[in-house]
Structure formats: structure tokens, C-alpha cells
Amino acid sequence: MKPLFQCAIFICLCSARAFIFQHVSAVSLPNNKTVPAVFVFGDSIVDTGNNNYMTTLVKCNFTPYGRDFAGGNHPTGRFSNGLVPSDIIAAKFGVKKLLPPYLDPNLQLQDLLTGVTFASGGAGYDPLTAKLVSVKSLSDQLDMFKEYMKKIQEAVGRNRTAMTVSKSIYIVCTGSDDIANTYAETPFRRFKYDIPSYTDLMASEASKFLQELYGLGARRIGVFSIPVIGCVPSQRTIGGGMQRSCLNPSNQAAVLFNSKLSYQMDQLANKFSDARLVYLESYYPFLDIIQHPAKYGFKETEKGCCGTGNIEVSILCNPYTMNSCSNSSDHVFWDSYHPSEKAYYVLSSLVLDDKIKDFF
Image (cartoon, rainbow, N blue to C red):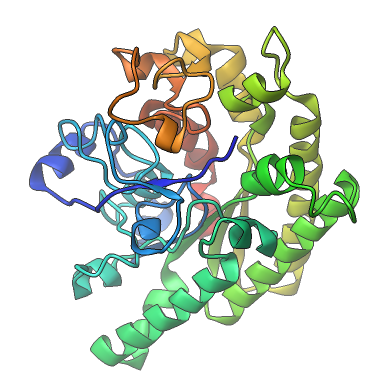
């Protein structure tokens, strides 16, 4: 099933800030460092609403998305019941509590100066992945970043722009759609590639993207690995048989790609000695959450909160969906593909907190 479709309009209310503050607090940065901005690239996991401003089916401007955002029932463009990792990471670095989508036409200069997400739900490392669902590819997202830099330079000058670009944190989170959607659900890549060669393609595209991002001035770059994609509820439903088991081929593809991604990042770190390239391992922490839910305060790992939790995502998770769970915090997954806000927070802490020092 596709981790597609983003929600409605970005809303930044005072009540939202109070609500979020209860969940996320800044982590102490080494040597009293400060971060001017956070920029995010990727897919639906980190898109806070860019797809709302595109001609694509990859959006969801309706409840129950945003059910627990800003006190309740505020679909915002986040494919979640509340926050997504973009917000959580920006808060951890002490920048701001909500990371807005770059395409929001209502953004003010200060919103731009402290960072945005360029992510687009449905995107991947493979350029075909975004093309299949008419969303912004990583190349498109880089073009938006170039446009962003031009806007900022016109507003605050060349020197401050250069400082912002070089000192900010960059996060990349994508790749799941390549494996779960483009490769597994369409025939286009399977004619030419087996999993080893397809993950080679993905890793090559990842390296190309990171080199281009470095060329634009980014120096503090964190890249999330692909999580345990074969264990999300929709994948269990589609290919897990009567027992709805995890899909081992998808998980094995994720592990293989992650090893190649890590290697490529090590190579780039040797090439670009002035950069901090931080590999953010999410596969095994997320697997631990799924295998030991009680340790993290969860009760349900195999079904999403929305509806039956087996298949509902995007338009299948809508205001008329029946029998959604009463407490999303009990669930690792919000819909059949995307984690709940609580799971995002737990996972972001497991993956990022011990790695923050590596950005400096």
C-alpha cells in the first residue's frame, strides 16, 4: 500500500505551540552551539503539507488526520494524527516547534529564516517514484531549496544567507516508497532490476543528492535509513498471508539498501572533510519498538488506529471511517502505513538523541 497522500492546510496556532511543548523539548547541543535553521527533504514521513499545493492525489485535506494536533481535529498536511519527525527534530535542535512546508504561500520571512521542509509525500531516491504519483522528486526539492536561497539572499544579504546555509541542520528521510511502491507494486523497475541492482540505483541516487546538497553549501546533514518497511500494517495485509506476518523480502531490501547508504555516506565523509554526514539508523530501533511494544508504552503493533487498521491510508482513512481506536497513543501506527505521533516521537528520540553531537 502506498504511503501517499498528505493532509490539508498548515495551521500555526498558539494553542498548537502549547500542545507540542508538552511532547518535545530541545536537546543540549555540544559547546553551547546554536542552529539557525532546520531543512528537511524526503517523503510523506517528513512532509508537513507541501503536497497540498500540488496537482496530485497525494494529499488528504480531511479528518481524522490531525486528530490530535493543536487540541484536536486539525488536518495540517502531516500524514499523522499529530506531529511528524520534521517538527520533532526542529524542536530537538532548539529551532522551533513546528516546521512549515516551503510551499505554504502564507509563510513570513522569519518562518523561512528558521527553516522549512521541502519534502513531498510519495517521493523517493528513485526519480520514477515521484513521477508515478505526480509529486516533487528530490531533484525538484533541491530546486526549491535553490529558490529558497535566492529569496533569503534578497531579504537579508549574501553573508547572512551563507551563514544560515552552512550552519543549519539538514535532514533527509526517504526510500521506503521506492521499495514498497515503485519496485513491489509496479512492473516498471522489475523488468530491468533485481533487488541488489535496484538498491544500487537507490544508493547511487542518494549519493548524487547528498553531493548536490553539499555543493549548495550544506555541511550538517543527517540521513535516516529505511525503517522496517515490511512490518507496517498495509504490507502485512497485502503480502503477509493469513497471519499477516512481516514481509521479509521488503525488510531484506531495506537492510541491503541501508548498508549501501551507510557506505556511500562514509565515502562522502572522506571526500568532504569539512562536512558532518550523520547516518541515522532507524531500522533496528523501529524493529525493537514493534517487537517489544510494552517497553515503549504501546499495546498494538500490527494495526493502525484508523478504521480496521489493516489497509486504511489516505482516502480510505476519512471522516466516515468507522471503528477507529479511541487512544492513538496505544498504537505504533496511525494508519496502515504511517506511525502515530507518539511512535514518531519515541523513534526520533531513539535514533537522534545520541547522534546530535555528531552534527558539530
